[in-house]
Image (tube, rainbow, N blue to C red; front, side, top):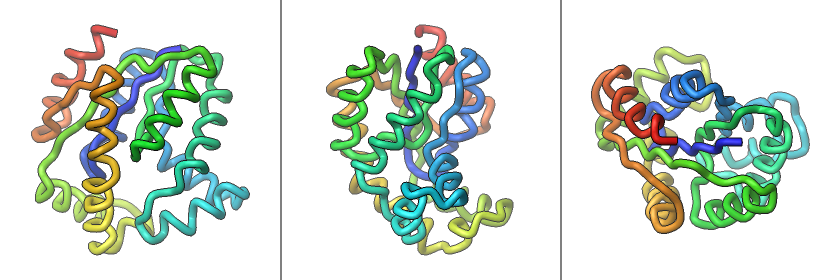
Length: 190
């Protein structure tokens, strides 16, 4: 099973590009954000824990995400692979993910890191808030907090992944087609 991670700041287009990548290579797109929202909506035990953190714009604790990701791998065992959107977000989650993937006798093939400047991220957040009906997208303070949490928690995790995995940095500015073209140059190498 192929495992590709797509990372980057909130509002960088990870979900959009995960969809494109997953269709291009015949893998499942797994959005941890969507999965967390589903768990919350279904009011599962893990979903109730997740909601306490996400509603404030905080990261879900690593142990909870590790359990959730283990379920995701097991549920997708018969797929060609998965394109992971939104995980890992901390250095501890990187270690957890690598250990989990190794324990299941799989490997992480590629990490795509989409880079977008902060001003552009916040502008995109405002547009997404107008277009979506998600309650968590309506507060500009949450947008800013998500970007700040990314810088303090996830950016160090990405730098850490660069020491352990094959990571490619992608310029996430421009049209969807332009960014997709930049990503596709690396996907063909898998």
